Length: 250
Ligand code: AMP
Image (cartoon, rainbow, N blue to C red; front, side, top):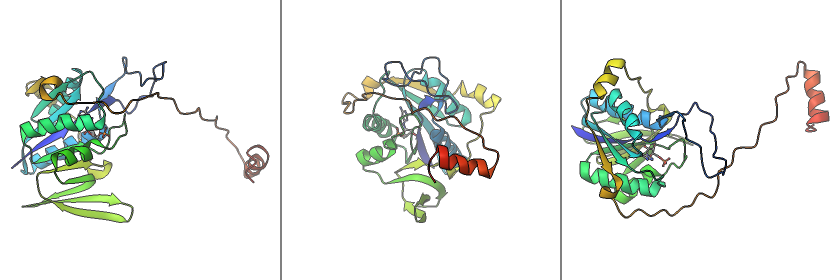
């Protein structure tokens, strides 16, 4: 049986309206509801399914961020992961540094499969999995929408412009997951209670890595321009008049 490591990021809940800091330096997270990155929920679900099928033995979730990320890891444990690792840092690291930190955990934990979301919905980078594969020198399959585990290798389907692409990869490998891979389950109350007893280790970032260098500087974040108000038209004649006289597009 294989061991699976899943990277879970804590992000602003996807239902919330984003509020920016007045100085434009970033998103205001004060008192905002935070949740597990939705693609990482899919990653967790896939790991648990592989465990239920007898493919995976231990499933470990890892998160990098402040102490509050314990909550995200407890959610992963309530969903069925066996163990959590929190690497604490108050810095917001760019993907290459996140990949470097994850590499250390991979070297320590020796999983045969590392699953990440295809992107985090706050940074929208879509980089960490690819960079981790590169620095580990492991094969990778990105944006996976279907997975079939066979004896020796794993068949992974990706939705690409020309149709469906199927890759065969032997472990160890990196996989980033797309929306259609599965429908994540909800954590039941008994499992939420049980998750409190599952092991969650907290490790300071400095012990793991001291070669992290920020190479990108965020200059500012701006809100999108406000949308024009909607005008409801009742008839086709009104629409034609509007397109001619006000919008001036015909
Ligand atoms: P990104 O490259 O930032 O779009 O993130 C892609 C994936 O990398 C996410 O879906 C997570 O699986 C993982 N990841 C990114 N940042 C973190 C973090 N701080 N902690 C744990 N996993 C992360």
